[in-house]
Image 1 (cartoon, rainbow, N blue to C red):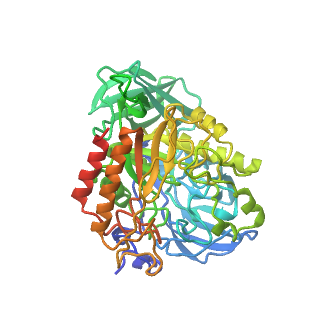
Image 2: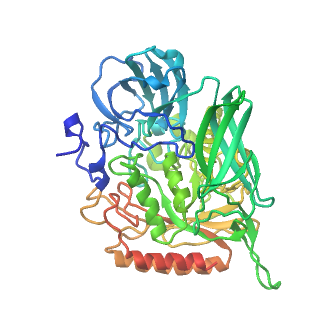
Image 3: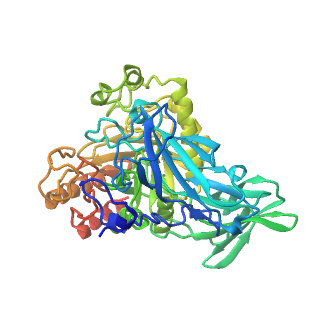
Length: 604
């Protein structure tokens, strides 16, 4: 019997699922604390079965059509709904809750990890706020709308245009094919509440390690009135330092080989009393540009990525973060961690998080396990003629730029209206603000392959202003404005360095994509593809993978500073993963894969 059958819930559809789908508890899906970098002891998880309805976009909420399992999107199997919503409709959610008696006298914050795309929220019939943006967390203080006691009613309306609109949407598309996948609508990360002091509470913090001065600076952002923000740093349970600017002697630096973690405790003090307190953590590490040593003038000195001042070759997979049962949402926290553990097991030291943003717990696991992350901004468009023919002419026209593939020059910007640009900056800014406390992130990637690319120099400047502590890969495989730190070329299937400029760090941002369909583990039995010829077995894939690795070693000697292999898992009809989409089959010999990967990293 399925775990949820007693609740009237079960996964929908007959497509493949992961082993973790059977572990989903409809009474408490994804029960873990959702914000591990800033923990308060009191909180309430609102994940579970909610009433839902899909109505015309201009209609009001009437009565529920059934129940949906939050936080899985309406199109997913694990939602129990698996229905297309589309831009002509709105998705409504409703549920009730009761506040714990111990929360009396405190303000209540309602948090959403992520909702795609426009969310409007009511509590007891009072609108408490709205938010646009499918990838960033947001919250509302719902205290004025709460009843003094008894049942409280929460209602959410979501509208999402996917690729028929201008918002960042990544690989989501109405007419799925090739590298473009099922649309995601609605709540797709944890919904939760917590009580805070009405006087003041901590909103966020940003720790920055200055290696030159061996100083950790912690910027604390808070709402309300308070006298002092007190930051305490400890390591291994022992106190280290106190203050918002702390000198650290003999610092233990974070790296993929040694992911050292320091604990943080931040307290707000008013009139000598604590009004708020959160537990968190940070890592001490620096990211920058270093040059090769030059023993004599006959040896070229290339720019490399420096981690803690040491040349580091970052090598890892493209990771799109899709799941056959949850789409954008991993079935469980164990599943979320599994992919990261596999990256470590296979000898890689980085992940390029491709055209998607993950829940906070994903970055937490990268911090804890020691995986460097290159973080993409989800694209607002693409340049595929196959997809443009299905779109409204005015939308298609905004996305018809020229991609200067394998060339330093010749690319053109998308003709993006001001509304599109303003929304891009809003969402990208929110994403950076939400993620910059995670030290695993070493590189920001605003654009990919010219999809919706516009005003690149201005976007790079905006990214640097939001976070000057990391490198900026301005256009992974896209049109180059020579404004960032990295020049990134894509080449399938074999790697190639067809563009190179010595003034920048030069990387191969995508290559590989070797396709091998494993029967019994396919999203679509008859229509599967990879880059180049689809192969017949894992031995063929490993043989080519090894040959590509030897090519990369040659490129390293000639200035290549990082490489990203496509990809960690199959996704829908793409069968070019190291693992199948359901994570049941690793297609390559894992020990041989690890040996190859370590050999590439050590080649620098």
